[in-house]
Length: 329
Image 1 (cartoon, rainbow, N blue to C red):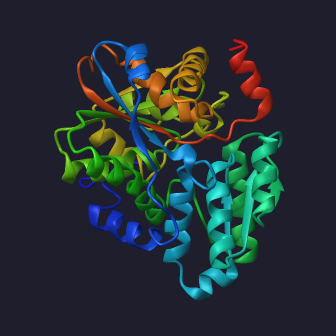
Image 2 (image 1 turned 135 degrees about the vertical axis):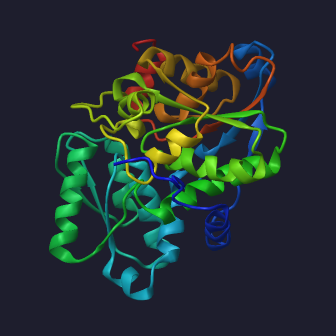
């Protein structure tokens, strides 16, 4: 993988086309300011919270799934799609498949979040449990595609997926054009690259920062090294961020576009989740709280600014939530 002369996998026009396809099926989500959260963060920062945890699948990835499936030909939809997921990408695809009559097979690692597994099956997806983590589940998905001829629906390396994620940034920047910065959690990077794509044209002065879990920091480490670095493991309760490698379509754009990139600990993510419970009174998962954890880590650099964060998902299982609330992290 190398950083090319044009690192951008999509354009704002691609994002707007994705928005036109998904808008009849998906309403915009709320974008709110909570004075109690401003007070908790401090440093004079005005925090704007994008509630993707209010989506029908409780995650922004329903945008990605709908953007992809609505772009398929009738023949591709009939054959079906295969994906690897820790949950939210699979949920988005399963939701889109149910609406648009497209068979969906999702590959998850053994021991995956049982509540996310059950939700995907309830939406009609076929579940395949194999591998120790997301990256090994992805190898299983590639094997099934080669065997059965279905379309791979990669959670990151797909332009339709990234454009779907870009509709999130588009909504934020059109509703609050005076944002000074956005702090975006990075798993594979679709959310961050989609946001960067919108920001480049709609609000080029706004700075976009990435944040990743320290236990799954391959892309963070690669960004700082200036070259792709793979890790042997990705261990975090923020399972939506648990990837071990950078991706071809997103890493060059992250390198070119991010103003900074921080890693946060499990304790910092858990504390951010508790703050969000107290101030927004809505449920988020670990990945959904990571943007706030990153904002707190960047507090001095962003003092006095108006900053957008994304509650990217709310699909936390009961046992993990218990551990967070009781301070086990």
